[in-house]
Amino acid sequence: MNAHVAPLSPASFETGPAVVVSNLVRSYGSRVVIEKLNLRIERGEFVALLGESGCGKTTLLRALAGLDSIQGGRIVAPRRPAVVFQEHRLLPWDSLWRNVSLGLQVPDARERAAEALTEVGLGDRLDDWPRNLSGGQAQRVALARALVQQPELLLLDEPFAALDALTRIRMHELVRELVANHQPGVLLVTHDVDEAIALADRILVMRNGAIAYEHRAARSGSTPISRSELLAELGVNSHSTH
Amino acid sequence: MSNMELSGIDRSVIGADRARSSQNGGGPPTKNNLGTRGLQLLSWLAPVVLVIVWEWLAQAGWLSPQVLPAPSKVIRTAFKLATTGTLLNDLGVSLLRAAAGFVIGTAIGGGLGILVGFSRIAEALIDRSVQMIRAIPFLAALPLVIVWLGVGETQKIFLVALGVTFPIYINTVLGIRQVDPKLLELGRVQGLSSLQLIRRIILPGALPSILTGVRYALATAWLALVVAETIGAQSGIGFLAMDAREFLRTDVIVLTIVIYALIGVAADGIARFLERRLLAWHPNYGAAR
Image 1 (cartoon, rainbow over the protein chains, first blue to last red):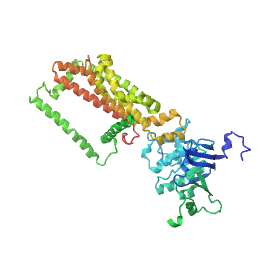
Image 2 (cartoon, rainbow over the protein chains, first blue to last red; image 1 turned 180 degrees about the vertical axis):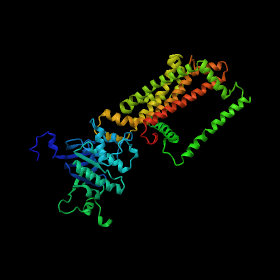
Image 3 (cartoon, chains in turn cyan, orange; image 1 turned 120 degrees about the vertical axis):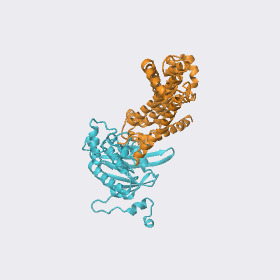
Image 4 (spheres, one colour; image 1 turned 90 degrees about the vertical axis):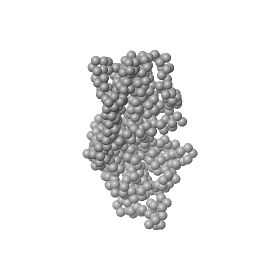
């Protein structure tokens, strides 16, 4: 696919995958959490990863983020991925722009941070403290901090789980917009089936450390994704609960 | 095990301090602002009445000046000593001793604290010894210190430094250990180097605890100085007091006690000012923006 592009040139990643995972193994002692997992995410592609608690989905995200060592297989990514966690993890002692530019090694860090904060609707709060933010605003700053790194791969670890329903819907719109503008590959780990349907191009369900189900979202008239089908994959019988 | 004891003790110190700061206007302003100001004025009532009663008792001759001189007499003595005597010189000497001991103690306590805070190996090597020395009430070592160093300046500065080292050490270690591991993880995700991690996350995160240590150390430094100056000093506030004792000058003795108290209050004020400036981000310390 990339045969016509010179290898090692940064341009070769322009159309290439954001991450390729092959035969990934992650274990804690003798307990294997992820067993020979394969995954490929293209740039600009939005992948949602569903699964019950303890199925290994957060473990996978942490391995992709380089936070945990892996016991087998390969993860190939052009650059360090950016991560948004469930908690905002803003440094309480730094102003918002200092938080957003954390780790940014450029002379015009403040300008870049200002742009990113403007994108998430907080361009007038550059010098404010994190403690003056609501939960949704703090999570928007965390998004700005991730995007200012111009990542090829954006990892979202249940970033909206702690927000109220209305804020969560607004965040969905914002994330869709930001991803459309920046075109990173996205892996969203979530418990929320509706969130996955609303945002993702592709939905994966993970079970016992492997990807057990995959669904590509409706494009130009193909069958729309079925909520009850997804819930069934997650072990919920939607007919009995509704 | 020693670590658990250590954190138990110091959490309570921190807790008490925070509670105090928020009481003194660090917290969010309450609805009845006038009410709190009124209460603050009211809190001065008892001390003022006490001084007035003291003055009145002394004037009326109920209090022998040999036992307790009138406040007005103490103030007059202060003026006289400041203009014709050596009061300012003695004050300067005392402050210099305290400052020198404080700087040395902070450097040692802070240095060891940073080492132990960052490295488990350093902890294994250093922490037990420090905790064992800390278990000695530092004033109990005074006779030994006098044998080693005599009663000159070195002995005084040494004693202050000894008292300062431990609170700084303990709170530095505690502060570094208490930094939220989730923020450290974030730092790694954002690609910070070890040095940047220390500068941007670990030290700022440890600062509230370190400043609590500074405040505690200021109090200890002062106590150490009083004791050191009471024994064989040739100058300083303590010397003034011991000299006055020879001549039964209770007015001078009371004056020196008041000066010690005022400097203690001033030191606490400086520490609190530092907290407000450096911890402006902190909900319990910083002035609301």
